[in-house]
Image (cartoon, rainbow, N blue to C red):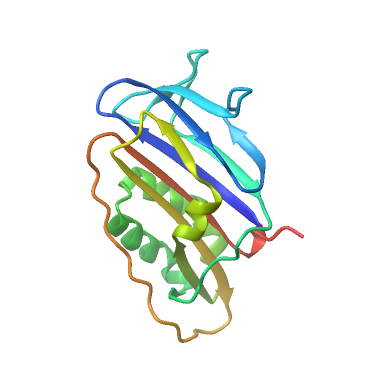
Length: 189
């Protein structure tokens, strides 16, 4: 399985030197910017989310992708969404879960081209099975962390499944936000 495009945003209350270490239970296939040789990203983060590395280069977020034989996504509680309704669905749910317009728009423009032409999509936001496979260690430790990871499968027709219950997220203090996902094209043989 390929974990596609997780982006990590950092929003400290004041300009802060931050170290982010990802302990992915798989093989990293791409990172940007590249972490230091010890595997950690070290940046200066500003309250607006701008990140600056040791060479003075600016970034909006930290990016990684990886492949693993990890736990398959859990669709036991999920949403069945008509392909043509995907953008509105994602905007509503991602906003409810706590992503800002900038964050959910970046999420939507990445995933929408893969999903909007399917007759239907089965969508589930993963929790512990995702965070356990990709733990983050951040110094200083954020006051609030939101990690949104969507898994989806295209459907030819709607299916009956209990709806997933989502929890709204409240940002307070130094906040870390991450989003990523996985669809059928991310299955690596």
